[in-house]
Every structure is written in structure tokens, then in C-alpha cells.
Length: 365
Ligand code: NAI
Image 1 (tube, rainbow, N blue to C red):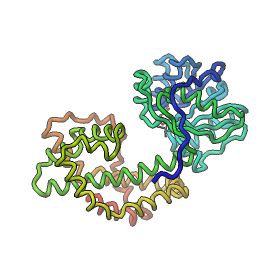
Image 2: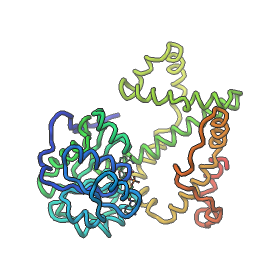
Image 3: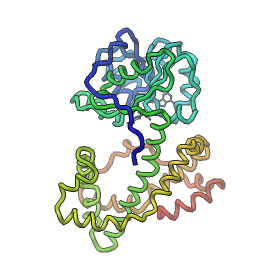
């Protein structure tokens, strides 16, 4: 149950004036970087890009930006939006960003992770703020152009200048993040919330889907129909939209009376699933920093590859392939995916053998 009321910054006020003399560097031109840089430029700010030599660098040039090495961009800028993946950020920060920061700079993060779990060392003479859109990069751009907007979690971690909050609101406005309300969170709260959603809600929801599909197909419902009913029709995404707009329970009023009676009368049978203690344990692992520590361990990278190897061989992948073919879905171009490690010797690593036994069983390899 909700305990405290959050501070919410509402749309409507213009907050951008404090940035009129500033040069903004967007570090990283990926999902978030491109969308935010284009929005900042469209809102009239002076924007440069800091990026290593790769395809993102090219893309930024094609979009008409001046692109520099990361350290060169840092040297020139007043405000810096760090939009580089969390897992590489600690190294990039210590090698290419930290030494070039100047007193009074504003450093903005789109995720609380690296700061919350002490993976980077921040100078004390800068402002450090959080602007974390709750929207994928493409959505950040599209919803800026349509003026629909997107939610953001925002906060001030370090206020050196005395104006960090004003800057935070100005930059949030400038990326299009104040077309909808923005909710104040600490870096730690943002990181924990994000990880909890990924580690507790996502897998529990996935397990419910897989169980339902298993019961249906074992009882003679054709897999094509089961998968269409459960998620391939995309009907569920409409239900999610209704939940967001109308309410988790209230949206059921759009369903038939038979559906409402069935769902509510049977819903009570799922009350004892024991989810609360499991989710609490996951929350504690995240909150204590133990998850971040575990993920920093090089052995976890190995374990990750091995778990993913099994996950891609889970029964649902075969069932989906059959159903997709039967329903005439197009092949998914392989270049859309990161290549998956196929080497078995990875799984022979003695330290991870024991841990993997559980995964092998649960994923029905
Ligand atoms: P991305 O994976 O799209 O980032 C690619 C960019 O990172 C490219 O510019 C690339 O050159 C650069 N990069 C990658 N490895 C590098 C390295 N070793 N050294 C220097 N540069 C490197 O990242 P994305 O998804 O845009 O995430 C950026 C930040 O935004 C992260 O903190 C993420 O948590 C946060 N975020 C992401 C969201 C999303 O929709 N993907 C949503 C909200 C926040």
C-alpha cells in the first residue's frame, strides 16, 4: 500500500530560460540519446554529441549534429546528459568523463543504477540530477512530436550550484518530459523500482502466462488459439492501456458480465500464491546492493550467457515457432537480435555447474 505522497511536477509552466546560454552535451546517441538530443534541439537549445566512433556516431552526424569524442564533448559543455548503457558507464565515466568535468557543470543520468550502487565516483563540485523517462527512446521522440508526452522520474542528487532543481526542471522540460507530470524519486528509489519491475513482476507474470499456455494446450486447445488468446492478438496491450487510463479493477467494467463474474469469483483462488515473501526477498537483494554486486562479478557475465542459452531453448520458443509458421507470421530478421552464445564449453565452468542445474530443470532443456 502507498505510504507517502510523492512530489509531482506538473505540466504547464515553462522552465527553460536558465539554459539559454548553456551548451548541452548528449553523451551517447543510442535509444535515449538520439531521441533526447533531437527534442532538445527542437526546443531551441545548443546541443553537441559525445560518442565513440561507431554507427551511432554516424547517425548523429547524419542528423546534423556536431559529434566529438566523449572527453572533448565533456570539456566544452555546461550540461551533460549521460545516455550510455549502465553496464559500460562506470568505465567510460572514470576514463573519459570525470577528469574533464568543470565546477558548476550539471550531470544528468537517465537511470539511477550506477550512482545508487556506488559504481562511479562523482566530483563534489557539480550538480547531479536524474531525468529518467518511463518510455523507450522511439516513444520519447514520437510523443514529443505529437505533444502527447511521457512520464519521467526526476530528482536532485547533488546541488552544488544551488540551482540544481531549476536546471533539472529546465532539462526535463527541454527533452519533452514535462508534457506529462514528472514524479520525484531519489536515484536509489528509481534504480530499485526499475530492477524490481524487471526481477519480480516480469518473471512472475511470465510464469503465469507459461502455466496458462501449458494447461490449455495439455487439455486440447490448439497452440495457435492458446497463443493468440494469451498474447499474440495484442488484445492484452489494450487492456494495459485501459488499466493505465481507467484503473486496474475499474477497467473490468468494459468486459462482459460473464467475464467480470468469472474473474472476480475465481480470482480469490489465487490469493495464496506466496508471491509477497518471494517479491520481498527480491526487493531486499536489490535494496541492499547485493544484486548490483552480484552483476558486477565477472562470473555473473558467464552465468548470464549460460542462463540465456537455456532460456532460448525453453518449450515456448518451439511452440511459438510452430504457431508463427502456421499463422503465416514473417521470419524475424536475425540482425534484430544480439547473437546468442552457442558454445557448450561455457556450461562446463565448474563454479557455475551447480547453479545451472536448477535452470536446466525449470527451463526444460
Ligand atoms: P543504448 O544501448 O541505446 O546506447 C548506445 C549508446 O551507447 C551509443 O551511443 C554507443 O556509442 C554508446 N556506447 C555503448 N558502449 C559504449 C562504450 N563502451 N563506450 C562508450 N560509449 C558506448 O542505451 P540506451 O538504451 O539509450 O540507455 C541509455 C541510458 O538511458 C541508460 O542509463 C538506460 O538505463 C537509460 N534508459 C533507457 C531507456 C530505454 O528505453 N532504453 C529508458 C529509460 C532510461
